[in-house]
Image 1 (cartoon, rainbow, N blue to C red):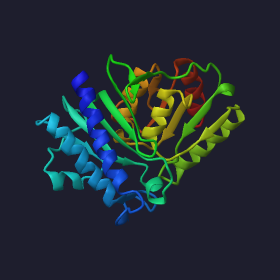
Image 2 (image 1 turned 60 degrees about the vertical axis):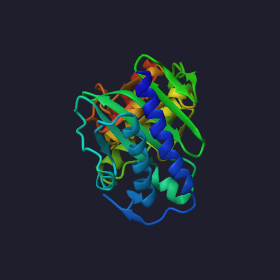
Image 3 (image 1 turned 30 degrees about the vertical axis):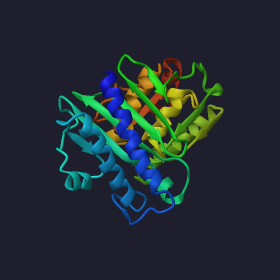
Length: 268
């Protein structure tokens, strides 16, 4: 697993270097699924940099990436999330934050085996730090082992979350969850716009728990192994085991996770 960890880390940092070089100059911006779902030239360039770093270490690599243009530019072999082995990449998680210069965006790289994340790295670009993990090796922040918190109660917990692009029923459910957590009560709730960063906040103890609806596998695949190796429990938003078909995530230490999952379930 050491080689896989090194490859994920190198790829995430290569993408981060490309993003950092474009700060303050996003290039062309366009919308994807909705007016709030943005993609920039930097998303694509970071994806190319990530792929080049991956294939340098893994010449037979296959790729699942949020930005499909990367396949056309690089010739990267298209993979499936259930392949025996595939790299799953979000080259710029938090594009809206990046566009506005809000310091919360990242590059997320994960290696999946039969749909299970076994190695992953998230480069937090504004903080210039990388959180990475591989099965059995623990979670590291810039080489130092980190762990989730052991907060036992919601009234001692700082939670992080995100808002879905779907501004219909899914947003209504998120508003219900926000209301329930605020009235639980919790210490506080934060939102920065990068699910990958939110996972690392739990893994490093900056936050005690994270939930979010309406996510894709590239948003969370690296975060799943990072949180698990840091001692956190990870499920889909429905409280069932996380998989590449999960449409959201809940992660926290095992005690707190059950409390979060109970409130989220009550909003369904």
